[in-house]
Image (cartoon, one colour):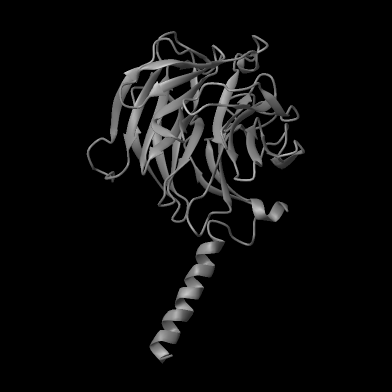
Length: 332
């Protein structure tokens, strides 16, 4: 091996080691990637193949992009202020769909008839480029659209959680045509004090995993290729507090956002808190969790927060929502 090749090889290894350490320093379990301005409620996340993280905001009615390695953020699209952005999911390479609604943040209720679904084409997006957002359709029958997940056999169709009506909708990402895919009592909220039922959605091995925030429930239900139920709901855990969106590992382990806590739920239902806690002021209002997608951050879990805009712990200072990185490998 020549000297030049040896130097190139050494620098490649050094760069790989540094990249693997990012976005952490000093083997931290949790690192702050970005803090948004005050009163920015970050609701949901989607990770692009290039590693950038798309963050939706209800309060700011916007989609942002954050580079977790350079710690640079940009606005992808600013919606009308009435279109608070909730769930987002990739339906094909670098093309996403997002759902919006007009939401009263004090009550978490959506205005009747305000739900919409949008196409977010990131393939050619860059700062100053043409608007990557286009309206697919209004969803007037949907109450509060939240979690979104594509059908594995037909990415032109997504399932959308209706947290208000307690339904799962089947929605075409080309025409916006929508029908009820699944209706089950396990999707309903149980108290008017917490009017949010079915929330996060993910599919693994022909089963739809979901959370019900008001019921403190994480469960799954077998589904057919078109998203209809093919069996009954099976509880996975009832030990998480106010579970919101979640990441689902290939082995069935769930990393669920819940109030001020990141919960880990093993396939056998064993549940523990990895980050924060009900009274934590360090991570206020965790809303979503998604794994990194590059070689450097595949073991990193990105989580979003409201900054304490809703149900902040006593004495906590409300600040801007955040994008945080969790080094899940440190938790065993």
